[in-house]
Length: 338
Image 1 (cartoon, rainbow, N blue to C red):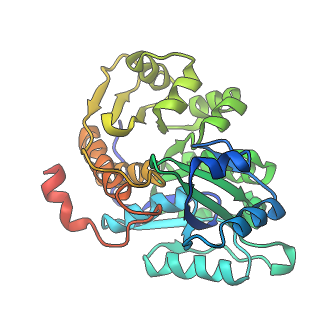
Image 2 (image 1 turned 90 degrees about the vertical axis):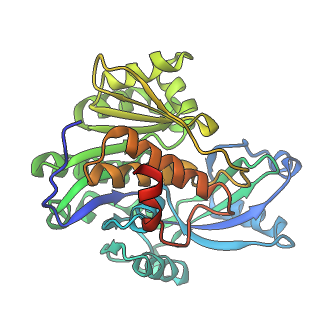
């Protein structure tokens, strides 16, 4: 892939849904009782989420700031990079919690909060079952109010890479914000990176995603399931090459197998092995991988090193509960990527 502009002030400008997570361990029977599809993200209304939380009140619950692209910005910061984040929150307690969490990590967050009267900050109940699978029920709240006007072009043009999450495709306003960010990136010479985010998005917006990747994207992130749904194929070499025909570079994560990497048209598919660990919670693994790989790309690393660092951060996150690592990992880089 063509190198990023190393003279820019910021490494990555992230755009996504600003969500506060409530983390819980549950059994499969709980998901079945509430008729929740396992292993994916489901959009719910506030009252539906309230019923879930009521049934979980006797469980040990943890509150964390989340959102896919924001999680990746955290991993960039923990790697020693400089990240910005664009997402919409309300001026309620959850919104203030979210803002402080980003600022504490050194991530720039400049979007003006909406009045609490206009709705709550987005929230997500993240349920982890004994097999380490994570299932999410999300009430988007005011995160759906993110608009093209919230994209700060002055900050974006100082960034090497713009990273957009696929979850934004579920709303007209957030979809417009995604396109505005990508068009501004093209205008100012930043690389455009996009993540498919979830199989339900690939299934619902396959034609949109195909056009988006072809017209705007330099880099695509997805997992094996999303990639197979997108192409309709099972053979991973064929799957990865098909996506690479549409953009400069694609990363496809595959749990313990590691990650597949391929550059545009005709290049061989490379599989970077993962790091064997005992997983307790897969929540945030893909976000951690993307953050690690994006950091590497912003530093001019080769693709294999980017995938290796992404795999390593992903292996660290699955060993804890929640989607956010808490300590700096910059000192680990030399031992992992050389």
